[in-house]
Image: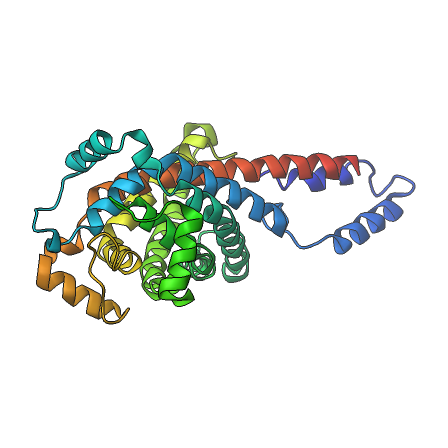
Length: 339
């Protein structure tokens, strides 16, 4: 995008016929060789910061919808009541708990989202550079990079996601984030924080593969159709393009992986507020239990708020991330021209 401008500003100062040209060229080459390797004009730490900002903004903005999804997915037939609709869940929370009920557990997510997304995007960009083999349109490389990214980031986020979801439950017995972390560690052991890690990875691997591959493809198509780019897709990408591509990819990936998200939620909240406790954290065991008690409808519970969460969340996340990248690219370009 803006990375090509940095080389032109340093080489136009002299020509082959100008005294000192070869000396200037050699100095420039030495400077480039000494610089850390970059991708998209950014260094590794800049991807981490951009990702951290994007993840934090995404989860904070969409947290109330995530609370509704958790409530709907955690309810089982043990409550002897039909599953609540999205409107009923929202009305119940607002009537009994007020607006604050929609934000219970947000501190835990705030603590985990930043570091997890810093890992997520930096690993993604690093793997994409390595796997794309100089082909920026390689969808398989984008999908594989997304899988590697989610395995790494889920290891960071899963413990805080467990705390967040337990705090989101109706009638949660925990006083807050610190109390939840302490009681889970003492009463259930440290392993309880990672009981859903395998399920989370199994869910997020296809989620991320679909998400990233769809995002890159949608972004490319939108850029080619954009009148601002003249159909060649080479001009600066617009915020609308990132938001639209992100929303489409987030909604599709969410719809595909909802059953596994139900399994993850019930594993993370097992034994709390009436949620079943499972004999093992095996995905097949949890699925069989849900099917036996709630039928196939139990595996898609919460799919509407999940899609309502991920479509705008992905739009917010990608547009924020790409904006942060552009900010760093402009800084790097100015620093390069000054030096």
